[in-house]
Length: 432
Ligand code: CS2
Image (cartoon, rainbow, N blue to C red; front, side, top):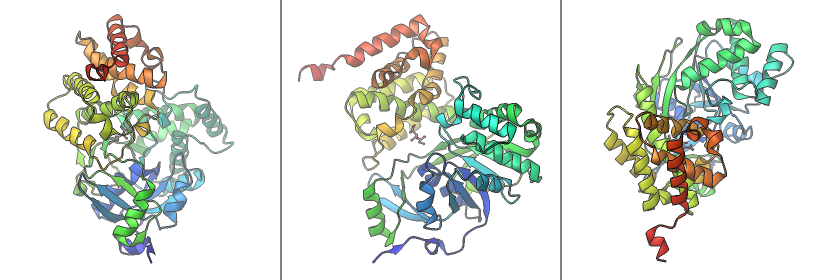
């Protein structure tokens, strides 16, 4: 007989809610919720789902408690995590707004995915996006409840303003360059269009913290539920699997306090840009390259793709281009460690998962390096390979993804060469 997982697995008492999260998915649970539990200073989280309301029910049925399976190359380690106190479907917008407005709540974290920000390629709010436009009309005329992620955040912040609660730190945790500043600009632009009183109050009401987040978190498989039951004697209907490695760099103010995340290894830095670029261009850039090129070559997971010398060489070439534009933050060691993380044979990180919203991701992970390479007078051949593989795998057009690169004759030639190479069998294969 197995016991269902509940709060007794983490000592029985729930911490008070002092944090609110939007985008309750596996990554929030392997990362920010894990750091908050490890900080051990009694911060509880009310977490709201983003795109999948049903995910909250499973977690709520076990008091918000779940098992984190740390999956190393040789073994698993299971640990119950109790920092999430409430798990609520995100479409309960009134509940979300009431929590954002709660004076005891000091931090709002978000994982809404890159595409979930609904920004233009230039990083501005996309007023032509029909859902954003509908939210703005509703917020302006007070005729309904917003549906987009940033619309919901605006609604919550406006309630906090009207209730006169103290300032809150907004902490985006998606892989976007300058995510704190990007979200500040986006929320300000949206508020100016729909809620001018909020736009005026925002600088005093909220601080915006930029973060670089890192922990590879594949989707949980059914077999993991059995594994957790056998290892812990508890039945967990929604465990999370992640690699042992984890990193979090943050930059910004927390006007009403925060958990002592540094106790769990988080780092606070005045200048986050180099850390962020290192992670985004090397880890995420390679991921997106593998998602395209690995899929074309018949692979299903990151570990399989990186074991293929053709893909592996493409990754190394991409990194050679990217590191020219990064300060020396131990880049050689970082590259070595990344290859080991990618090769972890027990982490089944599916290329299809990474390939979701690929065009938004490539704009942030590959195109910036390609531009820097071109400015330095080189052809950006490895970036061109990544984009050509994406185009071939998805049918996407370079002209839509990055019109400036598409219009650049040197890059265009590198891209055409790469596209041609991708279709040519390697020497080994042509001998089969
Ligand atoms: C991945 C990331 O799905 C993706 O786009 O590149 O989720 C990646 O696994 C994380 O950023 C690792 O920290």
